[in-house]
Amino acid sequence: MTRSQILTILYIIAIPTIAGAQQTPAPYQPTPYSYTVQRKVIATHGAVVSAHPLASAAGLSILQKGGNAFDAAITTQLTLAVVYPAAGNIGGGGFMVAHLAKNPAAKTAKTTKTAAITKKSPAHKTITITPAKTAGLDIALDFREKAPAAATRDMYLDPAGNPVQGLSENGHLASGIPGTIAGIFAELKYAKLPFAQLIQPAIDLAEKGFVITAAEARSLNSTQIYFKKYNTVRPVFVKDSAWRAGDTLVQKDLAKTLQLIRDKGAKGFYEGETARLILEEMRRGKGIITAADLQGYKAVDRTPTVFSYHDHTIVTMPLPSSGGVVLQQMLKMVEKQPLAAYGFESVAAVHLMTEVERLAYADRAQYLGDRDYYSVPVDTLVSPAYLQSRLALIPPKKAGKSTVIKAGVLSPASEETTHLDVIDAQGNAVSITTTLNGGYGNRVVVGGAGFFLNNEMDDFSIKPGVPNMYGAVGAEANAIVPGKRMLSSMTPTLVLDNGKVSLVVGTPGGTTITTSVFQTLVDILDFGLSPEDAVSLPKFHHQWLPDDIYVEPGFSIAVQDSLKVMGYLVAQRGSIGRTEVIVVLPDHKIVAVGDGRGDDTAIGY
Image 1 (cartoon, helix red, strand yellow):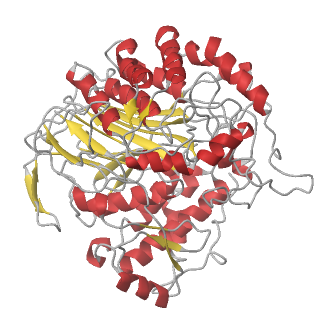
Image 2 (image 1 turned 90 degrees about the horizontal axis):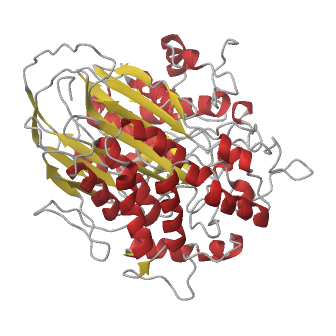
Image 3 (image 1 turned 180 degrees about the vertical axis):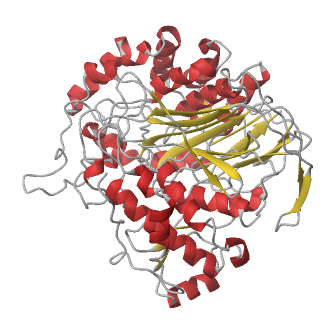
């Protein structure tokens, strides 16, 4: 893909697994009691892709009622908190990267005309795209959870200084201060419709119920033991018999909480009745979140990380998301390498990309954290000279070793996450990643309020050099400090061509998030893969430690064998992320593709 091309790609996660991709034969209108997964839609005005059919449908209904991409994103986000409780949430946090097609501060915008180009993808599909140039505004919003004021550096260690197994992952002490609701109200300033209209679909689904899928039933059944162990008040997710596909899930307590938020705004969550229920839950479970923690939480506008890759502009999330730094390092290290000549997932390409991932994740472990609390040498880490010195460490035609390759020497100076993207007819695009961290967060439902709390405290370095639940290792930069935001892998990302959004990409998956975004960008921008192939073909992952290449089912056995000969340890694993894509064609039609790794649904009009 050249810089003349405009592709707009939307993605969002899902839980495993409803099989079978299908192209939209007719308008798709799911109801709470009758819906199926739709993998692909061709639209003309706007599209939503999300982890659940009902959330995508709710977001689309807002677009059809005159809302913009931000309105639809808010509705989709709130609906996911109801229909996808493993990761959709109001008790967690996340990040938003977005693009306003028209910058309110811009006085004029020059428009240039460029001839349309035609290109054939490896799947022999021809896409003709006519570029245009407009003025716009890129936005980054941080609503990541924070450490409570009573948090301490060694709070998860025993008297001998060893980590207490599970303490930072399960139960009340694992929760950071939730940021999702603060984030939603920070997003609201870009929206058009009344908030009461945006939240009502979520309220209705919580109050009246919806039928669950087979995947949701398996997910709830597999977590029953934890729900029973860590909850002080029996939640609706606990069932005496097994959950089955087609069962109706009704969440009356959650509906009441959402109604308070509708009527009282952010104070309906951080103060009043909901705050009281959170504090009572903390007291019952010996948690440490206080009223002052809740009232003091604020979402923060950040300056997006913006850099070039070939002739494209990449816009992504800055710290405390590690994604912006790590993604920039990886892309800039491969930018001048002959990836296209190597070919998609060839031995040479996988070798180069794996070693680049190793180098970037080694730096992540040593240097990255919340810049509000720790001096992170970002400019040095992404400088051409430094990245060139890192590239020189890659051994030709053989595996590097993480025991040898460490973080660079510098001069002084989450897997239950969910993602949603929306695009509207005006060219506004929203990319939001939000998370509870582990599946169902800390497995605790706030008694009487009906929502899960997060276990994001595990994303801190509970002890330097000790890996978290995703195997990520951290150092002093990511140590626990009261009020500090824990490091994240969430990487909501946009690509702009000629001033317009051409690509929105991202995925859930803990530490696999940034490598999946990296690979998806390279697959499309370098290898020229079609959106369908970029979504569905097997992925791989390396994160410095452990020193393994993880590959999805279906990854080439011949390539695996060659990598093993080079000295790599290759390990099989399940699905890596769930990436969705939307392409905007020259006639303004939008082709949205959902990932077959989950219940992901694309819907548009």
